[in-house]
Length: 258
Image (cartoon, rainbow, N blue to C red; front, top):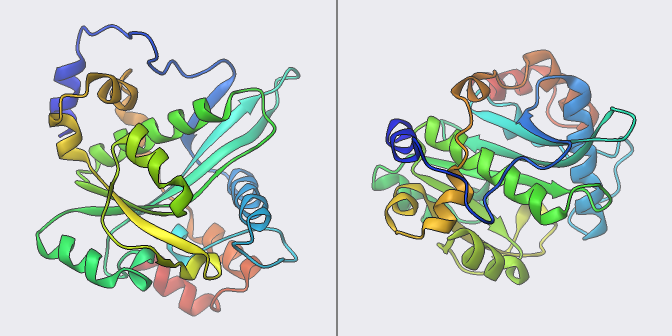
């Protein structure tokens, strides 16, 4: 899939509305503990404001699935006037594996059906955009999503799954070509707030003929080496497990290597 996308885009020129990276905005796979900490703090502040999580003494949201070898936390960093970088947005993509996907707690049948068709799945989790930043919120969202989609294609993912609040469903459907794949129901990861399952078929996205949406996702192509960055280190995973009060070290280690 990745080769086909590169062939398609060779020689193409960015048209109106295509993503350019944004002045002072850098999107990449998180590597350092301080980047992860800022990302999970931004996620906490976003979720806390919406009532999705309870108060936490360390002000982070961390899931065991974020430390899996198949997971990558993607961050958007905004460069301020003094040259320092601040967290503008984040999301984590969780690849399917022997532990399954987090949303299977709420949508086991829907995920099982896709997997039974031989589809290669990944889930989008932990999406948060900072409210106060130099770059427009929608631009940050676009850049994160562009990196997410191209990274997923580089890993031969066929379907990206996500659970969103019903009031945001039209945004994902109309702007990003997501389609519903499960009913509205209480979301376990959001303290029972309503959620609805959506799916982005990456193969169909390349074939549907919506040139502007295609260009938003795939132009310009991101260098392959950006996707080869490793996931979270074992010691960082255990560190965040301890901060979040998740299973003790031995259990966390099994989750990491599963």
